[in-house]
Image: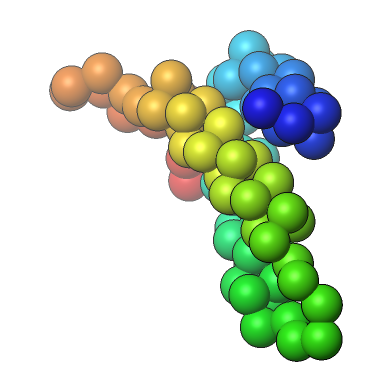
Length: 79
């Protein structure tokens, strides 16, 4: 993993610790938007940046998995 992914791991771990699912969902949406924009770039090779964003998305997805409610319970901070 890259240093960027380590930073993202720490951010996600913080959100998981305080059970802030909404912050993780927002972070995931932002990273997906950045990834989509990077994939349309021309004139340079964004391969390393794309890979880093994909790693961050995987870390965020893993954090969201940790916050999945157990069967029969309601999410804590979902409106």
